[in-house]
Image (cartoon, rainbow, N blue to C red; front, side, top):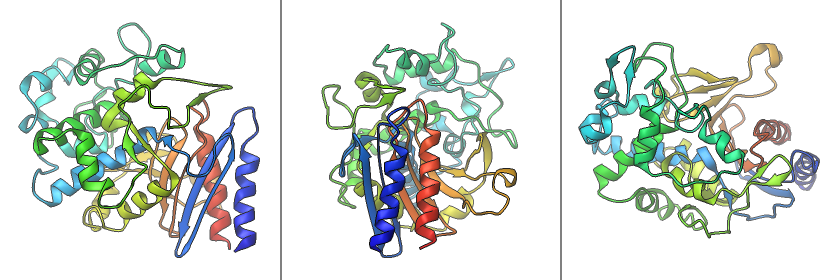
Length: 348
């Protein structure tokens, strides 16, 4: 095991090239073997922004509520949200579909809604582009709604074979969690996930003066966007550590958060962006045959974030893996690192 620990650490050491990646940290679990490593300007036990990996927390709460019959995934969102929120949300080719959208479609990114974060707004820029240019800003749920309503949807909700990744879907799910529970999203995370699993270093980022999480990098320099990180909430606002995230991802896939049999129908995949596919509340990372002819690289289910953070499970190797390369400009390097670590751990 000493050799394996060393080999895994060397993978992280090589990942830090001081050009694209300046710090990285990962942890994995296979059966009784647990390993954590860090390299570069990130130390062990460092808290970091998990960005869109937050969506797994939101999915877990919605799925738990579904199992408790607090809500049903096939309910229309208008059952829980005021008509002022819903109206004008989805107008496609002159027809309003806003009141037809279901919770399941939000979870699966099959609502057809635009992405308020990555799709271009009225000024011709995406919010993502503005942040990368250093224009840090707050936005409220209401401002997110206005932005979403001003960007054209992509297709009618539930169109067969269609999916479009949209952060608006999960902002809406966060609001629905608050409506049905009568509590803020952060309190729901505490009650249903953080306290039961003793995730003491995981929390929703709400204070722009909080400097505990490692500053995000964009290319060669830190990108300080605390206002934006406070605004993401249910679609990307969580901070965590490897230790906590590893406990969470194992709970997610082993039936400790919601009935394990849900995973069967959650794995109904639609393409979103290469080589990612979206299921119901989770993603599939699977290389196509042309890039993986021997099948040596396993498939992974879980989620990742634009920050270079990820939390995935490899069913083939029974490996849970979490971590970050903390680089907005090269989040793909997080997947390359994950593949190397898992193949090394699986081959031991």
